[in-house]
Length: 570
View 1 (spheres, rainbow, N blue to C red):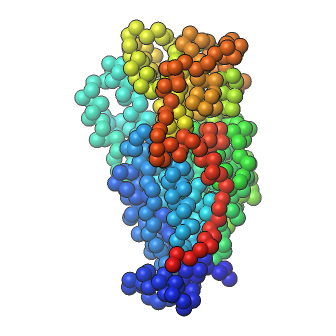
View 2: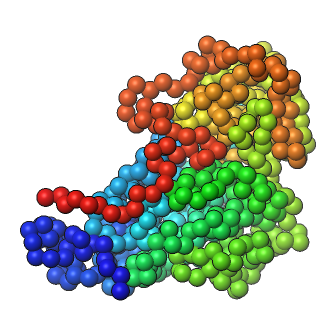
View 3: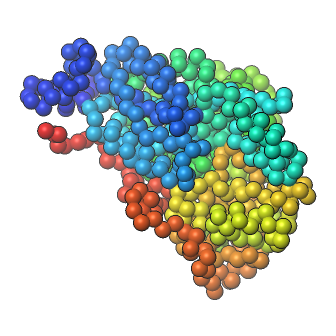
């Protein structure tokens, strides 16, 4: 029988044990602190994180399941990051949220935790925390919203924001119509209904083994999500009894399976930086090369925006993640376990595809080789990413003249200037948007196209940036360039008029001629565009954040500290 960690607080008859029990009684029976697992519900519900606002209802179902299994459920509100709301970018606080959650899990008398997340950074931060404290932990994703419609057409939140806003700038959609679409975009509770970062991270977390198989992708308003939450509460108690901690079942094989899933669903590039960070907390040797080696040639089987046509409600109806994974079962590691204690592949036997348009078969994929590709070259010595499934095929091999912007402010000030020297073959370059430079690596890499080119009918161009882009976005975008400009990367040396060569099949991104870079130093305008915070979290972040190719975690947070706390509080 497992000795409960919470007994370090509650067991015994001394003064400290009395204090710990007495302050927690408040109507609870005496045996609540006598051998019953204490299960925290790490809840990211917040009115300012609209995608997670419904998680209090989900938490109530988790509580019921914990009680039913003989445990004691404990609400633990944790840092919540609303992707659409916080400035300058939610990514700036992912590591802070992970650190705060880790410390609260370690500091409190708990034996296990149920992690409730939905919006982009919440599931990654919760998993980073759980990996570092290594207590039994299981994720309940909050689920996507239902499909909204506008003018009789389904709307993909995020993806259609980018599309419709470009139509306004091109003069093909009125501002009035654009504004009217606003109330139709978000139809219900839940996170983005496209294959953006929120949906991607929920599905990838299941493929990783941290979600009960079959739960990820359940729409937020669907009653089956509450049923699953109840069952997950019961499972959390069982996990404590079995001492089933992240460190006991998350292996390199688990991450390999997550990479296969990421490719097959056509998932967000943001998953790469999050998986790297989670692996770093576990001490697992995961690199960008693993994503290219394992995932780049996996077929995309899900016809979902932004790479395809449908939305998450359709995906769930069509069979969900299990149906996708069954199609690529031969690419999965059969030994990788899940929170259930069983291998992931054991849950795929009864997983038919119910709609062959939404989820394709292996024989008829949406894209034959659509996984995320890793590029290297003299502009990205440590790597950069591109999502071929969301790019224009004719631009995957391209050479064009660079038009360089030193900051996001510089970009906004000049991109629609009718005198800007740019054409459809140009390569837009935006720097100063990496972890250190912004700070926080914002979702700005999918730069809006110049208005004068939109008016000519241009809808895609090659774009290069050391920042990220929304998982709901699309286009031929080279992003996560490492090292970033603010960390001394060659992107800081590119100049307007240079020629940049992109060759995705060859995995290259280069400035031509290469010897030009050796003779240059960054301009004053480039350096001025980099962040230089004086105090607080931003200063700590800029001083310690690592680069995108290793997960953009803080250098002193790599690895695990476990759950032990040696000193009493009184």
